[in-house]
Amino acid sequence: MKDYDLNLLAALDALLATGSVTAAAERVHLSTPAMSHALARIREVFGDPILVRAGRAMVPTARARALAEPVRRLLEEARALRAGADAQQWHTRERCFVLRAPDGYAVVFASALLRALQARMPRARLQLLPATYHDAAALREARIDVDVGTGLAADGETEAQVLSQQSLLGAARSGHPLLAGRLTLRRWAAARHVDVLLRPGERSAVGLALAERGLQRTVELAVPNAYAALLAAAQSDLVACVNERMVRGMAQPLGLQPFEVPLALAPQPVCMRWHRRHAADPAHAWLRACLAQVLSVAPVAPQVLPAWRSGAVQAGVANSGPA
Image 1 (spheres, one colour):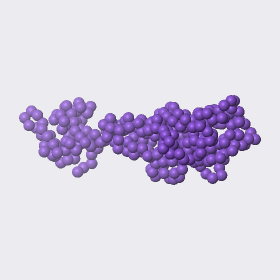
Image 2 (cartoon, one colour):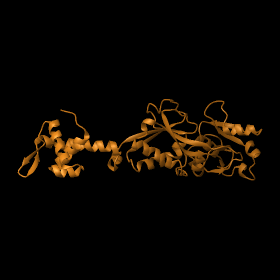
Image 3 (cartoon, one colour):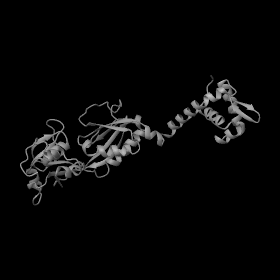
Image 4 (tube, one colour):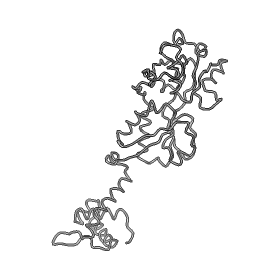
């Protein structure tokens, strides 16, 4: 078989659908002589008359009838490659997206993100990996689809988008003594603290900012993520200082009271980063759009209380005050 291109297949599809050179020409916006030339080329390529005269009409040969469905299917697939997924493809497409994000994002944002994603891709699934999942080549080798967080390393193979500016907010259990009266920097620094530290011996931004003012906190508990810090604060007289979106998202179900920290701290940009191979992928673009939507609005607080709040589990940090 000789070489041919998609334009020739489009002409063949029009000829088989209409049974007329003139009608086929109108269908694909060609002149009648151009369509006659295309029919001659099609006959040469397939080694078959394709359409033959039967009285005043033209009818397809057996070979042409056998080609009709495969040609139509090929053209539909080609159009989908060029134009992206249509509504039916979105509805039936199955895909599992893997995100790497700070611990706690799964608690606060995962359900909202899945709902937004499935609004167009009902059969999409999500897997969230913690930020502590260290795999430098994960984006490049497609083990994860998107990296979310602060301070993500940039390189020439990835693209990035800022999702929000992350500010820190204090949190303490309702009725905590710290929240009675005027909250000064010295009173706050003198409280018992829970801090978020990913690596042994590291100093947090809060600790460094206090040191510049000649102050320091008493950090009685260090945990690896913001959600654990909020749980500890909810069960004790420890106070937490974590990103604002986590505090506001979990304050109500955990019985926490947010408060402004009396310390000026520069907000950090929260970014998402992905490999360039996904730049033109419509499904991946939809995932990124959903991430931008969900992470740029106020989070919805989960309605299911942790087991310890219902009395099912009495464990963890001892509560030295009322819950």
